[in-house]
Length: 169
Image 1 (cartoon, rainbow, N blue to C red):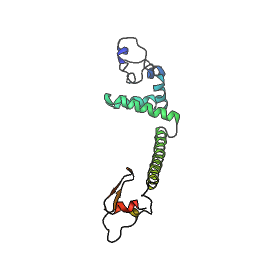
Image 2 (tube, helix red, strand yellow):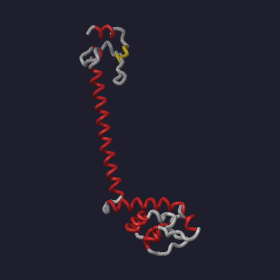
Image 3 (cartoon, rainbow, N blue to C red):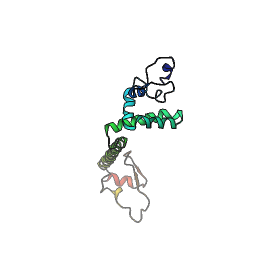
Image 4 (spheres, rainbow, N blue to C red):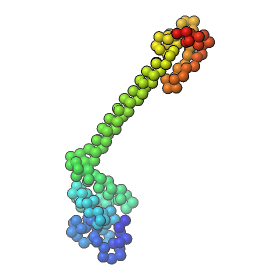
């Protein structure tokens, strides 16, 4: 990351070495992940985890995983600074509560849409609840008399006499 400027000679020490007041070696494990221009990043990680523990964790990981590990530690450390008891679990819990609330609001809105469509459908002439097409079929007419769609508001008449009975209401 910022390692190229360090190899050219007298570059400033990384944020970790600066905070710990030590000389920043050429092979400093902190330097690629805690550049000098981001001192707060290491300060919060050091406050929560400690420099020695961070050093051990980074050295135990393969180099290709260290960047992600540092990002995770920084996130957790910042969450712990904001909420010392719950840390990032508190943030996750808060987000989950928001999701639950929004899902409940969405379900209510969807139910309201269906209710309004039902009300709009029932206000169309010939579709009231006491109209002949909504009555139970007689024993001689066991075949479906009509098919209705609440969403398209259209009606398909299957029975030949049904059309006459609809207009006689």
